[in-house]
Image (cartoon, rainbow, N blue to C red; front, side, top):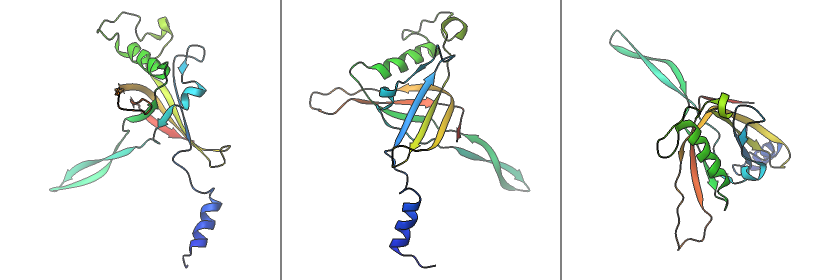
Length: 183
């Protein structure tokens, strides 16, 4: 088989032109039920500037036998997931994440009450879910969707303030999760 640029271009065109890293959507939800759930609204999801399709690893499990280490497939692990958010003037997304973190770990001064994190009292679960979906180049069809389950924020990044800067404020949110599945 000979390789030609026209063959490459026609194969790539047949595959929709290739997936673009800038065409995606992210949804983040947490809450006990649809009536009590908290999620990013449609306009807020557009402020998620960067995310990633989640990774997974299978760590080798070394078993020693006759003076040698033999490697077997170990457990699947999932790295933390980070998103970059463009800050709006209302701090809406940041306030939602701060609120979520308060329900998980208590108030900023360390004080906790018995209703914090209790879904029977306040209607919020500590864990949520996120969806990352690739969008096709036509903007209409969507590619595979990755669901991150049992998700909760571990880190709310700093926001730089600087008189000499004229860019929009950005910050990161780090999440821990148990597993991901894809459609």
